[in-house]
Image (cartoon, rainbow, N blue to C red; front, side, top):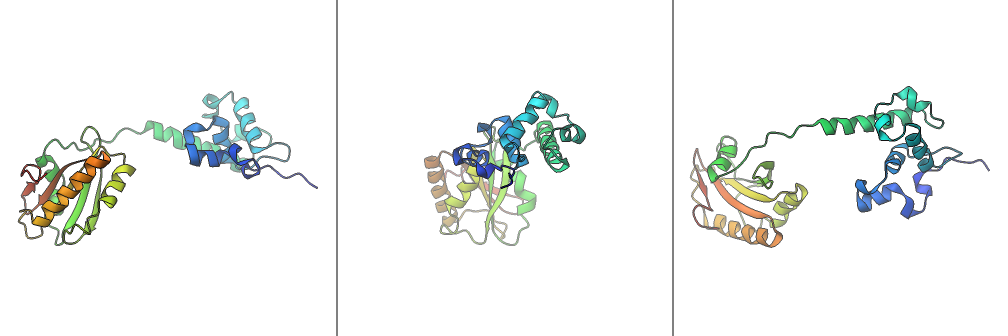
Length: 229
């Protein structure tokens, strides 16, 4: 029987880097385990984990490996051009992420700031749009998302959809916004009821609803300022 190259799936489950990454996150893996995930297979003589460990030893760790060329990596026995390119591509992605500069985020310090952020876009809409602004601890906008389009109704505006995105974005708080195509931002009974429901849910979950803004034609109303929340 001929020897076959050992793949990650050939190891016991508690020794498989991919499975541990899924369960515990990438930070729980060692450098050579992360490289093993990139390589996927070893050689007839050694497992993929042994091969990845030998790569690190050859370059004395990540410091020298990060600047290695395809030729330098393929000089290692068991590493062909395809595997070398995978390693270099992964390292380059890491370098580019490290060089990213934080975006200049829009900060909302008042209802007027929030209204100004969406006014020109939302005041001309012919249908009602319910939008959420997801903020970090500095009240900077992390993300803006339209939750639904149509007349406001408590059965449609489900807290689950709103706060699911807040968790996904690691938001500290949210501001809800919707427009009145009539141009009159006066809140309806439904607007007020939905706001109170979302406010209560936010208090339970720990993600505060800071305000609910209603956008009209070049004017707005803050339900917080009006005392409805």
